[in-house]
Image (cartoon, rainbow, N blue to C red):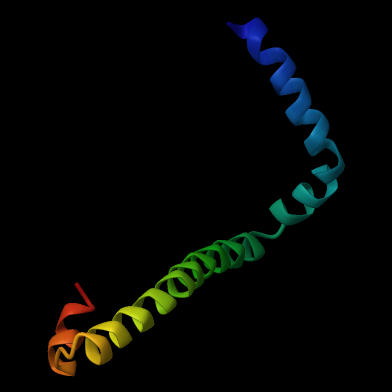
Length: 80
């Protein structure tokens, strides 16, 4: 089994080799690592917002304009 992973490990190390100076530079700055983690969390929230905004807007328009459902009922249904 270990023989199977040796080529994969070699390829991963070969691809990561040019980035070793950058990795050591980032690891020497713990505050930067902290803020990069915060940035990653923010990117996740941004992705959720970008994917839900068109769906919510379309659903809101269809339910209120096309199906003539009251806006109060739609406002209660959308957060579900």
